[in-house]
Image (cartoon, rainbow, N blue to C red; front, side, top):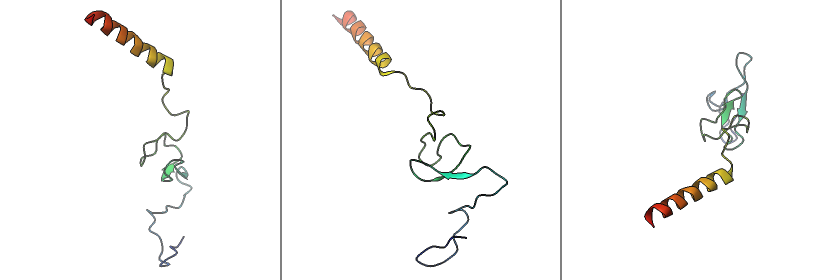
Length: 80
């Protein structure tokens, strides 16, 4: 069991859980370094996706810009 450097007390198992053979492994989040299960798609602490495969796909920038331009043209045509 790991010890704290300043007081040499045993760590609480909730602070530094030891991996067990009965469940999935625990890994650090690449963004906030919180302990997360390897089967979790998102970090419960920071909410970021743990891998790019799990993250929802984003619309390409040209689609968003094109929609905004069409909307601006329609509003201009209506009010002018």
